Length: 364
Image: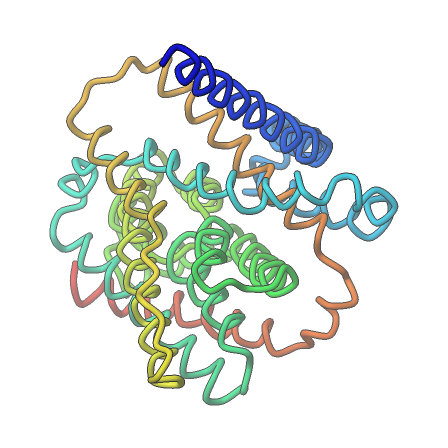
């Protein structure tokens, strides 16, 4: 009996040692790529804090993908073999963690501040923009479905963050994600200069509510990125900025149900294509976790210092994911995408301005 116990103990000890060695080996494999992604991300965060870039709505995530693309097409190919595992880990696992922590920026109380009308405006802008993306991109331009979905999500929800959140669901290629991010970032940056002009024109035409707060809802429901919303609304005033950010946060909150519906839609489309080997619906669990985090943030008091630190971590994780995406993107592949993605994104940008104004006028 004693011999059996000793044998079992030795076996368990050997298994523990083997598991520890395996984890150590995995850590050694991902460490170089994680370090590279972190260095690029930290540099992007530092550059993103510069006042000039902030005033133009150019944040750390945008800078991270640009820096990643520069390195990805110059120095990175020479060290890709050593860094590939860690870069892939940043692009996949860290991205999901970043999306989950993004929920700390939101609370369900935000919905109450914009009211039912604000929620309805956001929902209708989202659904109409994404539907238009599918019609124009797939039916008219004959583009690849995954690219259309990414550009549509980025335009209709929250820019680069939405594109990155959809990537694991659609299993898109790196160049497709980069093309989508690039188009929504460029046109979202253009909005910073266009919307203040629209505000002055609206004072005379009164297409939408011409108050600063009313126009802020219009900005929040139609401009791509959160940083771009802030930069755009600041040129109008504090009231516009406050309502724009709240409207935008409610729109961002719709990301999780959108991902769940998208996952179901893609699974059903595969089922129709191959009914005998129909895959099960792949629920994006990070989207569910995102909703849970929003709920906890809404009902559980947390020290502001802790939230600030977690949001800083979230920015780092998302920037690392963006950097990794850039590192694995080849300019030649982006060039082969041609002019169609830009035509699609520009069409959606025009709809957000014109259609978004009509939706705001009807529902506000």
